[in-house]
Image (cartoon, rainbow, N blue to C red; front, top):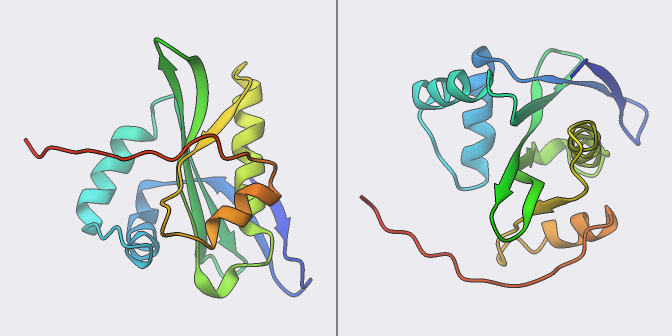
Length: 156
């Protein structure tokens, strides 16, 4: 995916959407922690190094003019027996002081474009029921809530 300019709604700042790099790990970890998903920088760097070369994953960042990463999105192509192939947004975060400027919407649009290029006809996203501010964001972007579910995990 090529870099593309992203203008804010205020017209004061511009940002570029580009592919993530391993050297972005520290800032991605910082932004992830703000959402309640803390990760050590070296762990996140290893995950990035593993995921970036995989064509079924997309990791993009929004970078401000001062070369500061202000948001990121991770999407992946899923292929599930009962529903087939589709794109899923696996993570999306925009720095608190840059929200409401269209950065998140542009990151989502980039994912949608990538999905179409891969021949996928739908994008899915999960949003924690407690993240009430994200629900209207996705609805404004044209996403429709299909279900509410419980998530179960077992540590191995």
